[in-house]
Length: 407
Image (tube, rainbow, N blue to C red; front, top):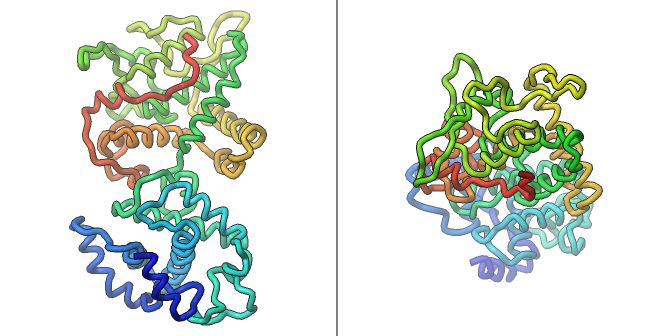
């Protein structure tokens, strides 16, 4: 389809054929109602890449947005067809990354960047996808436009699902921000560099690791972490013959507690954290204290004041700033991610855990339950899978694959 399209258009000696020459905002507006109905029924998919993009363009709210997004989409398709020789159906994360690098310096320049000072007609052989080197602001808008396009095409199941978290910031639609698989592995490696092996010096390391695991494996937010007592870890009925535990998380005294099934990894991490504090591996029934315990005063052995939510937030800010510097110094290929990672927060960790569950086939309703959010939550509307598993199985299959157990 793509090859025949280009052969047909090249007969008129136009280097870059117009992909949407007769598709303007008026045409998109006329199509909009029919496309919305088709999508609501969920029975049909676009027949081609061009149809898929046209369906997307019917969602634009006005002629200015339509023209801007049509231009961004056409540039991207030319790159995909000519440089990558592939269709949107076969798109993956590497293609997006390569395109965003390509637009910084399109090569060969004579083929991609116009050398005439004025704007030429779209049908003119001198027309090129890029008028001049793009400004930082234009490159940012381009990234957001392509990200929004791909997320929409994933939503209608035309494009295969892959992760766009690192590109999603600032789209204006509250798209999730989370760590990619590579970033998650590097974050774990960085946290392990904080471990000295000297128990008296490793209190911060163990606190960092425990908070990250509570967010990733338990889906807890900062409020739940500081308000939930340790004694809320309790034995639960066996699941598939395996003894397990539950955690009843508290976010607010006036709200019913959220039940969290404790899988093997989270139970292991509970033991690692408590052992570092000289406590039993699991809490006793009447034990006082919360999920994150205060540091002890060395001279008296007494605890400092109760941990508050800002303590958790500030600790994670310190971790993410350190992680960003770690990427800059140790992993030059990840330098582009450092700026956004420095602004990360606990939600990134929770959504990274949610993304892992979805990748393992857990259905959206179960993942929403894992995070304690409504099924309509904007946090997860771009992440989808269609299989169903018992909620208890979520915890049993959920692993952070931390590189060191330390028990």
